[in-house]
Image: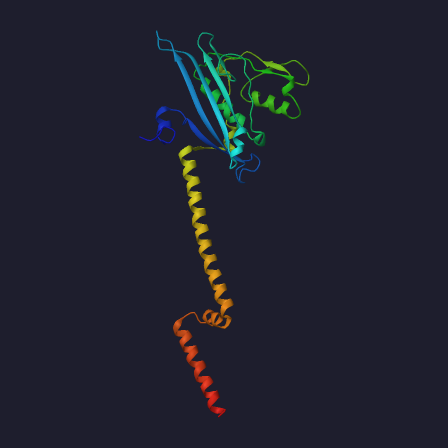
Length: 274
């Protein structure tokens, strides 16, 4: 049996996505161009059931992400996590915390800001909490310190696209709190599908191996061509006339015929001069 994250049929059997996915991120304004980056996302879910009735009393989800780069030192940056949770006791869900308390959302991918990566991750959590449509959604609090520059409009729009309505405390909409709502009122967002593409880990690794093998094959062909040309250069430098003769007459029969003709011509010329 294949590993669950590599088994193509496993997500369909379980009705969910693989635990590990690779995201291909393209510029939302220039989707046809090369990818801006690649991100690994690992999904972890924890469920605690009531021993009396078997119902879920607590649950949490964590999406850990790490950007894939060629630089080993980059592991210190380009990673983070999004959390969500549910409590039957409080009949509440949180879209920003692994426990039903106030949390926060931070995307540690500055090179990919505005490319809907945060939307993708939050949407996964929204889809997950849809299991409890009657639960109350923990309010989202917007702080003035998060409203620097163009980040304010991006932050507000980020939450509003999921159905949050805010009571702002100032005319500039820098600070506020979301109005009470149930999970059923949350909106699933799919705008990310136009520039973010999901790949199973196995498929991604297979594509990388194919690319390596193709590069190695091309390198081998180029190396053979270089070796041949270098040998030809040495032959040309050692005996230019012989090398030129061989190049002009590559076939042995042709070389023999031309050589014989030259011998006859030289012989006739020598005979006439006697």
